[in-house]
Image (cartoon, rainbow, N blue to C red):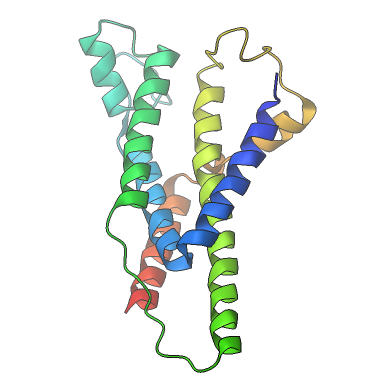
Length: 195
């Protein structure tokens, strides 16, 4: 079996390579979409009737639980609904229309190569951030659901490294005003970069 932290790091690196090929503007627009997905799940959290005030669940998880006659605390229902919504928003943020940065005519091969290297490096860095946000969010939801994976896929125990990484997953600190602030700054940065 592969350790979950190895899968996490591999996914982050894979998204870095994807970002290198797409360019940093497209990746930044995808980052905005990913942040919007996190925002939707966090902003539409409710306290179900009869639950303690500190219990917050995504509203669609509650609706699906009611429709399927499952308890709203069912971790598998919450996992499937949250990952589905996050996955759909993330897919469209990567697939949707993107603004292309047009670089004016440049002279000389060296100048073109330099612009290409800068674009690729910035794309790689923003892709790493996107990979962290996507893989980290998926891992967080799996952790919250208690890892409902088949025995052949997961051993049932986390390593010390995995337990340390869990503390730094996006959902652990991208909540409330932090999430609103990051979203506002990111959207402002995209507006300035694209225009």
